[in-house]
Image (cartoon, rainbow, N blue to C red; front, side, top):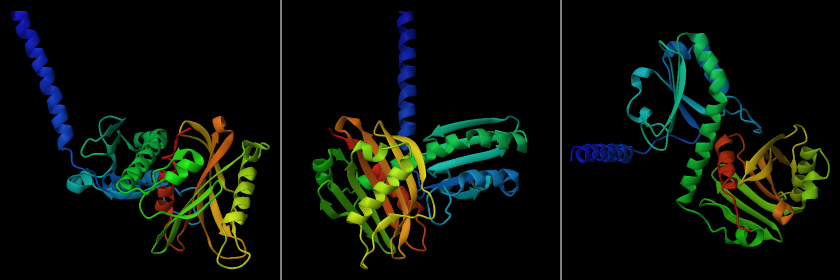
Length: 326
């Protein structure tokens, strides 16, 4: 009987703990913040010194592939004494302080959801700088991945139909409200979303594997492919104008994985030949061995004299939502 009572108490405690955890999770309010914004909780004396310089250098570094310099994240600094209310509910938080021990920790959904919280502490400036050097890449990767998801969640609230994309290419894409089919032809789709100061575009097409892999100069092959597609499909309003890859600056090339498939990610600047329009692009060449092709998903932005970072990020969120159906 005593053994039964003991087991009952343990079971009751387990249920109680589980319910408490679920209740705590349930009462978490929604996090806040614009896309690619990070709250830095750090006292002014540290922010205005070496530690602050290191944080800005790492988390506000220029984004690759944009025509004008824009920071990786928009950093909002708050002293530790004001870490409450809406600040505590920020979606991305990095807390930096000096203390009795050096250490790093990360947490999800600690004060709100969804949320990333990173804790960095050190006994002196050198400790903190060392941890920033060791952990900044991990923090950046985590925040970027979760911001892609956040962008996709926001778009899912109002999606346009991707039926034509599924039928033509055998893939699905989550494309938010505002995008319209601008051109649909044999194995080529162009969607465009207009906004006050410009527009975003998504291109979908496919090429034989040999187009991208005809030799080892992948970046040159992708550039030539883009220029050929641009001349055939993306013309300007003036005669004899079409989209090309800007010749003055070589694009950035990255090896990534999208939908479990080997992918070449190219970031650079497009321009209209014989005209003055230009802007950033991201090109994902996804190797689809099963269908003997590279599926090309590209996004490009036109937003002259204004910020382009978050518009390009929206394009990446759309592209990274791709799912292969066959």
